[in-house]
Image (cartoon, rainbow, N blue to C red):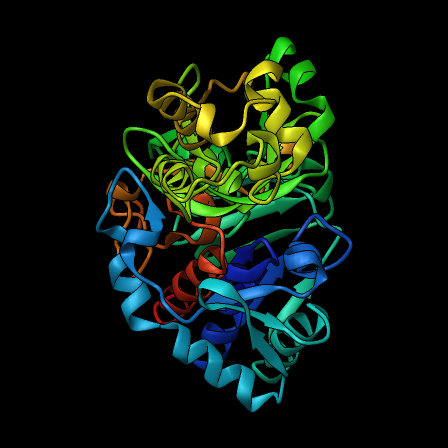
Length: 393
């Protein structure tokens, strides 16, 4: 039987970071993954440019049934610590809106940096390896069984991610390990994912497919201001992805399609200025014509501004500032960027990421019930949780 100090299952962002840190401590580390390549999700993220962190990272940017859990790791390994690593490897990057940081060239720069650090730390990476069983070692630690070998270790780290994008190899493996050792799993669902619409709405808004515009999308608990994209299936774009993590089945959303102006005031002012333009031409300067004709009756659009009553102006403003829509659902794990829910953080040490009741068993990254907003937050959680576990395993 092969023996190592640490086995990490999952060669994604958190697993690679944990392996590097454990290796630096001269621990013998074996990183196992069922995929044929390490870091596949890193390579596809951010449109191939990898949104690897954000200039502003707060606990408020994360969802979890244990709201305080992420604070310890995020404060011990910050975005600035990761940027120091980026600078050491001379990786060029740039900032986009909301403090999001992307590679200038390719996400492969991030993966190559992590693999180089793994090499320096003498980490062994074994791919195309399917785990058949995990059991407690009679003496201490664990035995991991694959098709061809049995490996014993003192520390076992589960870094297998969630259920998002199954074509990239996502499975419920990590949740099953948690359940095997009596650890609760918070119910999972797709997050950062487009909405689908009911048939009648899908047909009504089909002509808007491909249209993008800034908006504010809200429900009773949360609100985001970003771009909305109409698709042939429903609603997408950054504002939709952000909101999807806070949406529940059957819930109605309110969308402000003109967040930058007060349309009621603007129309009243135009009347005072004796602007005789037709309503349809006035609105065409603010919104796409194909959108306007879906939201207002044709006879109203033909009226000139002075002919509009105050009640009509109120109605027009309401249509664009408080558009109510009830999604049918989401596109699910197939296109979701993250998985909400996961291994219950109440059962895990926020400092070491070790299971409170199972010595030597650690959970890091997306497999835990910690989900970040769009914008580099999920990668920062992966780096931080992996780094923290790496100091202890």
